[in-house]
Image 1 (cartoon, rainbow, N blue to C red):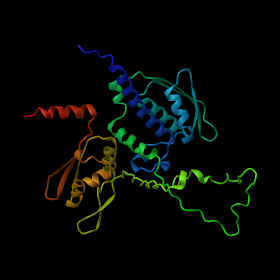
Image 2: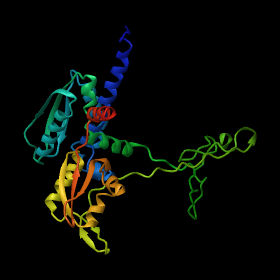
Image 3: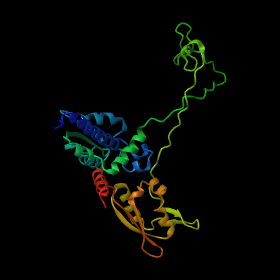
Image 4: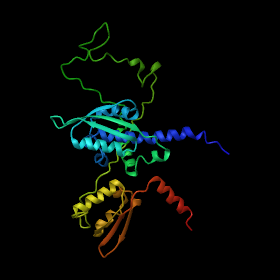
Length: 310
């Protein structure tokens, strides 16, 4: 019989990895507002309850809250309720205690936050992020990734009538702006003055932006027509896309049907093409079924079952 002792550290590391992802997304949602986010889909899931400058303090507290409290101020009652809801629904805490004081003159609230971390099993840790939240986490990582910067900068043009060495101190060998650059260790011409290959310019990867469903599309004649004429229905469809829930609806006209058969269009608007099933139900009518997103366990189960189908 094989021993299972060696598996414990790996299991602990997996739990920590899943927990850290959920924690990072939670803190990002609390400390970012839509104006500070580029990705369209992510904009709808950040709330700016606290300032971005409080991100590291909040994360440190939530990761190590024992015998500590977190003092905060939120701008409104709605923000207070939203903060409490986000913390409770995160699945990271056994209990959340948000104690607030009377409303301030400007409508804000001072509060004290106490939390008790939840002891997680590997199964519970894997479920901390839903399929929708995993996509939000991926978008968040792209937002946080450092942008590629060219290693070659254009020389700064000196203004007429200015002397770049006007403030040079002959004894200290410095200027007010930080001194003369030492060229002896230049990356292009090192020891002996032999030329070296310049580093290749790093191309910045284009960011993938997930957009909301458009209000209008072009029909076969090139005219603008509404994609989903009913505004309430369009809102329900968008919510189903964001939440990963199932929804069934009908569209009229081949132009609208082609949109929901176009994989590039679907991916651009945050829809997994595998979720979409299109069926013609009338002369100019199609039924669109947007299946619910499967959890990791459900997807593995379905794959497993398909392997044994005759």
